[in-house]
Image (cartoon, rainbow, N blue to C red; front, side, top):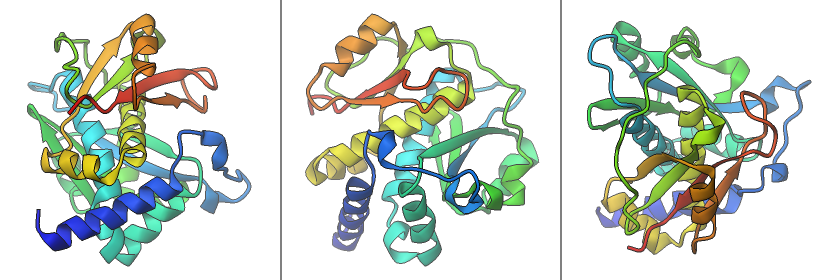
Amino acid sequence: MGESDTDLLRQAHALLAARVTDDRRAHTEDPDDPGTVQAMQIALNIPKQEPPTRTALLEAAAQAVVRVCLDGRVITDEAWNRGVTTWYDHLIRKVARRARNKSWEDVQKVPGVTVEVDGAQVRAFVPSAVSEVDPLIRKLQIRGTELPADQPGEIDRSLPAIAIDAALDMSLGKAAAQVGHGSMLLAAQQPFGWVEDWARQGYSVQVREVSRDHLLELAQREGAVVVRDAGFTEVEPDSLTVVAVPGRG
């Protein structure tokens, strides 16, 4: 990472840390004003033949979201900056959609970041008002595709991790949105030196679906970030959905 890249990362992180909090009540939206209902769209590439594992797809989603937030274009590109900062100032919504084949290729043209983890591909896009979603994204299906649970192994306590409450039985799309929230909050609440090291590691993060007791244990660790959902879809308001932990370095 060059000096100019480090400076852009520092500025993007400062913006994220200043604008984003784990208290969702700190931000609002007005349903009567469509411009205030902002969301980051996320495309999950799920081919019919040889689909990825659920864990790899969730890890790619977590990485893609934080990469959009910390991309240098947050500072250098006016449209990227406007999309991200307007989203930061309202409720931090995310919408995950399924893509495959030509639809997946088409959405690569829309500003955002694509991440691949163990063959799983996810693209997170620059946020916008939900009434202004690009037509290439809008045509993607929101519901309908699930992936079975897999067995990725125990969490390595030395590495960043995001744990999901398995008891909530969230859909793949819902879980992808939640781990994305966890990754950006984790970055927001860590010092810049930690974030710089994480960036050098490609924002690698472990995602695991765990028991509620294990989730609550993780929430007590130093530096842990908890995500409570607004309850718009699938889960009750204020449900603790994920916990992100920075690892021990």
